[in-house]
Amino acid sequence: MPKCVCNGAKLKCSFGTGPKSMVVLPISRTTTQMAKPLANQLDMIPFLNIPAFGQCKSPANPMNWKMAGPVPVFVPSSCIPVPVMPWSPVATKTKIGKQPALLETSKTMCVWAGSIQVDDPGTEKIEIK
Image (cartoon, rainbow, N blue to C red):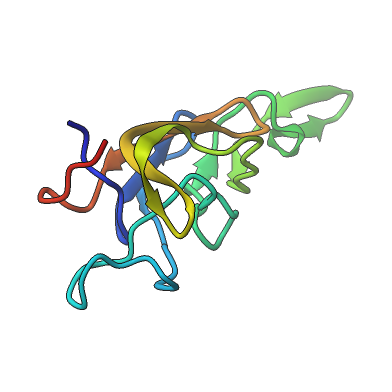
């Protein structure tokens, strides 16, 4: 069974420069008083849940193209994650905050064609269906 994703999980983007920590707000998201908040399918808000991944290397990002005279030149710019859909796949039976729980196998897409995925779920103990 896959593990659930919690606050502090490491996320990575296929066009980013490295894994960054996910933030999950603790509103109705813990299983016990000592557990970290658990993520659900809708935890995809840029700069709140999904951090910037350093430099964006996507050729689809128009901010990465600078004019050098009459010719555009590719220059990576700061990452601005823009998820275009909720996380998928998600748990079929387990709900967190009335939404399906996020799994370590979940992914979402960025508008700049990057694939955002879980690199480390942040917990080794909680497995869900």
